[in-house]
Length: 366
Image (cartoon, rainbow, N blue to C red):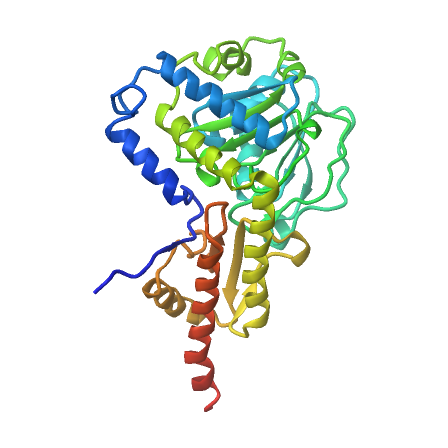
């Protein structure tokens, strides 16, 4: 009896294309360019230095990054950036940093920033359970910087539209980077944990305007100083070799697939298919405001919460993996990252329809 085909909707670590997994697995056993495992090679070897250069080149090309920006490879995940950003750009400043409180990770970023200076929370959707993004906020013109999260992985909301700001803009793009076209020049610093949509856990990508980096005048510990990474080609210490290599493979796949512009259309089609079913099927309901719905993380519940455990079991037997909502929120979350095939979303929709057929006739007998 053949095993049930698995459809991976997990929120992170992310799904990767099968071709990328195969090439990464082969490199673990023997990397052809050097004859050793990718896990064994020196990060100072010419072969790995070429990997770092190609990965940076791919990021620049796919996102059309201006020349006056640096691309850095760090560790510590996005969570390290919650403290690293204010340590560099708020600590010692007489200014306040402006933050949006739009979800779980924004709250964590605010908490860390408060350790280094004054934080002005200029907008919050906490009272609404983070089901929508803050609106009608004003960014103070004298703020040290403005920080927000472009896509809220847990709550399923996403920021759309052009952003206008007279102060430096810092954005956490962990779960939607490379999923849609962006104008990098609107931002002074972008950071993203790779494990959501770029590669395996262990790598953090930072894209920063050099002028912003050079604005730091106070001492910063070397391992937390962006300029140290920039000036050392992200090689100040041993980088996450395997994570960078696999990210390179994934970015090669994205380029060969058609790039960010192409994948954005694919992502929109996947999200529309699932949201249409959520809105149509009487057993389910979306949790995020329609105008702020995320294309990467689709959150939904059942009209009758009692049925959720049954559907989760039913879906698991049908091969649906990772659709359980975040532990503090419940419900369901389907993450539709770049490498997730359209066919997997069709399978989830089919699963929802099939489950409804088992429930609705039974309910109608009462």
